[in-house]
Length: 248
Figure (cartoon, rainbow, N blue to C red):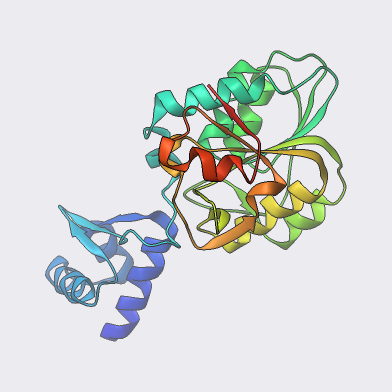
């Protein structure tokens, strides 16, 4: 296998998994660990990845999204606070869309409304909803490996079969000028369509997301209600001029 072919496969694997081990790459590419180690050194020099002990990870880029496992352990208390607030917005008998993501996932234990129907594109979400005996629909389509979110054209077609009282969406960035953003354009399409099919849209973002901008735009701030556990003072006034904020 040519060197550039190995490079392409290494980057492709990183984009799928976020982190790869040296031995895993050696097995995948049929090369020695010393060869893979040299490849990683060269790719790091090109600023395409970052070497870590025993492997490599992608650089922190606007188009890079952490995996579900990585996100689960970040800002746990803040996400739970946001999730608790959001769950209170669900009323008896409503049909809602619950976006894939760790903050929306954290809503499920707090849902107390009766006779609720939920549509989601999150594999982990539907398992948790069914365990709580909440009527649930999982969109069909392509499953993202490291976030367990269903995306793509089939998911979009599925989504058009539904109409929602409310939708609850996660985001990776909340910015006064750039609006709500997420790293993956494919996932942005699903979020945007759910928003269009909903009577009311809530965006869930812990305070670490305020002022951040990632690759793909969802929509403007004014198009949704923002739920956060604590709005940073530096951003409160400017964002409050654009949209309603619900805080913990």
